[in-house]
Image (tube, rainbow, N blue to C red; front, side, top):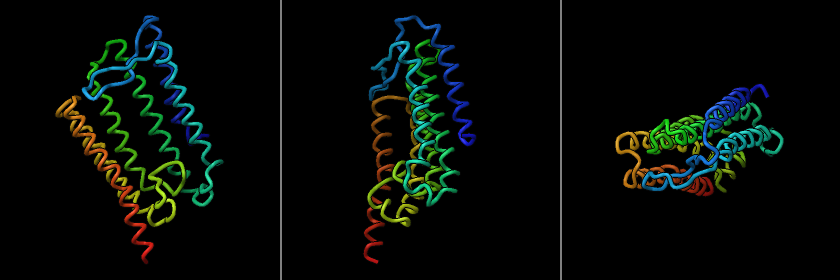
Length: 217
């Protein structure tokens, strides 16, 4: 439990901040929750859904991650590695969703610009942090680049996640830079999507190539 203390601290801060900001909203207030390809807000939560949903999601995800030691069949095979990586993974995810949540409420209060740029900055930052963590994740069925080929070979898992970590960092940096230079619009979003998907999906193909090479040996 103590290894996840920062996750609980973040969620508590998230709850306090969301209630502090959300209580002053009108009962019929709309909290943005979705942006279209043009960078325009096209989806909203009601006041209480917007205030309560994300802390609940964050807490549920944290509890699931904490339960991995009980439900993962590979946890015991790499217990020390898991215990070094899992708290960091949980912190990144919880921090990201807390940041998105507070940003949505600040938009509803018209404190921030509704351009949606901050969403991409947060996603980019999350991918940079995940990229640094990815090569350290042991083989498992719940987190990481889980393909039939990585799960079948420890060597394929290791090499795929080393490449995946680099690609995740590059993807995050590109997302931040493209958004900062071109803003949040349909053209930049399409460019970003193509580059992002290419970098993120290539490790899947790479794992297949590695597996076939290993199979020939």
